[in-house]
Amino acid sequence: FGFRKYPTADAEYSPQDNDQPLRYLLAFLLKLHLDRSPALLRAVIQILGGDAAVRKAVKEFAKGIKTRDGFAIIQGKELLEI
Image 1 (cartoon, helix red, strand yellow):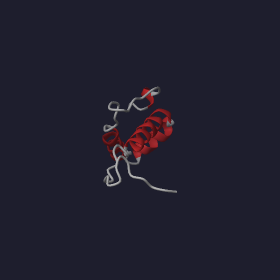
Image 2 (tube, helix red, strand yellow; image 1 turned 135 degrees about the horizontal axis):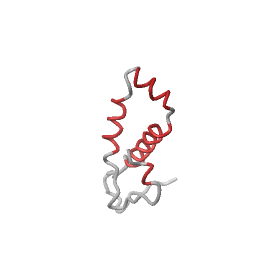
Image 3 (cartoon, one colour; image 1 turned 90 degrees about the horizontal axis):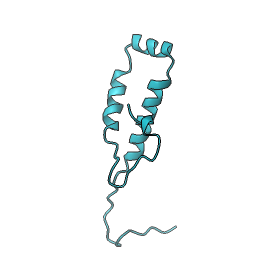
Image 4 (tube, helix red, strand yellow; image 1 turned 135 degrees about the vertical axis):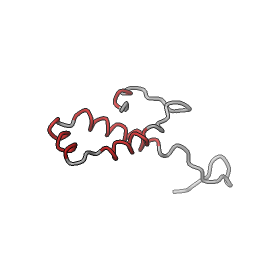
């Protein structure tokens, strides 16, 4: 295995958009949780104090999902809309 820097040998390490897969995944999982949780489970969670803090944090994080500049949602956009 060999490692080569691109475009030049002295290029600095500067990753870009490495957070995007996680943003897409969290948005999808929260949407799935909100849509498919049984009503009884949602009621119990709400009685126990809810998961509002987690929902808020994931929604804030998911706001950074890119859909331009090389990013495009080909299908399933509705699965990411919280």
